[in-house]
Length: 104
Image: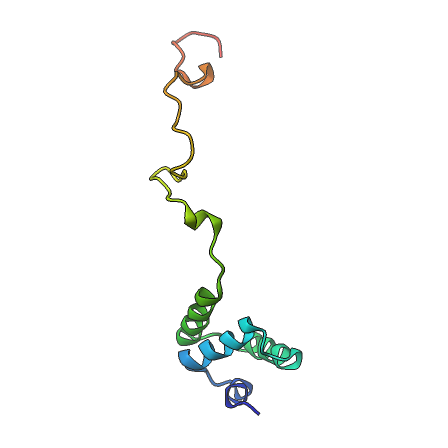
């Protein structure tokens, strides 16, 4: 059996590299269903350590597909640079300050 799984079954933490390689296999689809089930069970039964989280995160970032939003440059307002510029016309009347004593 894989040493990484034996380590998890004992309740001992994995190193960042061990967790990273385990998650690389997971995202590549190389883990058989029974190993995947035992991995998930072992991970639920113990708290993850910071090195384990870091290793899993590195693997996830490598396996992530690019988002369509990353292809467009965002402005400081969070709008894509290809979006139309904000209107320079006056805001709707509900946004204008009302004079004192005017009806709401």
